[in-house]
Length: 299
Image 1: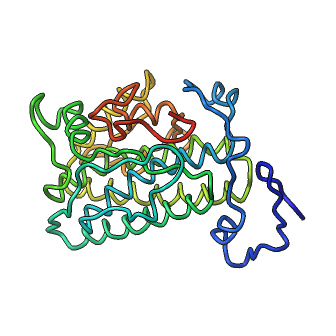
Image 2: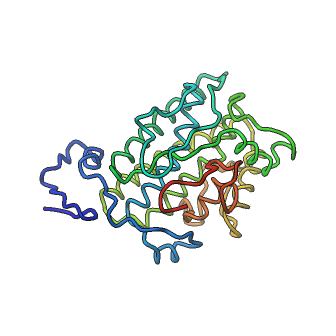
Image 3: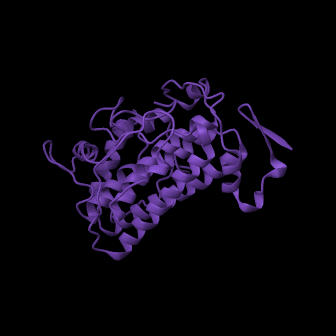
């Protein structure tokens, strides 16, 4: 049996499915044919009217994985992605900031190492899946972006600074700024993925990101950082639109490690909602996590 990806026909009988979905992704890949330009959208319904295919969705995810990988790898190793993990279409950018965190608690350092390894694997998985269509790592800012986010949340004053790598508490709060965003981004993007094999992989990515978010939220609860987490949650909510979507970690009397809706489900964010959070506004600025914008059709 064959399936068509863009203009390329893939003979599925020749794919070793027993080797796992990663083997399939590396064998099949995605190609650039048929990748359209996506305008910024305000709702999933409007998004469906645009040209969105699997390559567009996965490249959007790849941008976010670049950010997470650079943050965690630098926090545990002092260095980020290697040269073989960053090239692609679009403008390749440098990373500003990031250094090894002086972890004082072995288990937190262990969590950070585990997450860093997962994020590196996610970058490589998506790059293999996209093949020649993969976007390059865009410019990433790990310095003034965290300060801008901390100021918006009220964690520091209007002229204060926030160093995400200064200590493990700052590291945990910094991780919380975007961990939940990745979960809701994958949930929101699921509706646009057409190929079931890619959808299965995306579901696996969402599950791992949810585990990561759960780790961070649990440690924040254990440290009693309820007000700080709520402040970050409120700041995210102020960026992603008028609806009240985001949730903090609750209070000491009523913890909220797993943020869900009335049906016990994680909520979704549209591409524009996710973009507004990582830009810290409607468009990129020098203080954005992506100061020159994302690479790919969703910008």
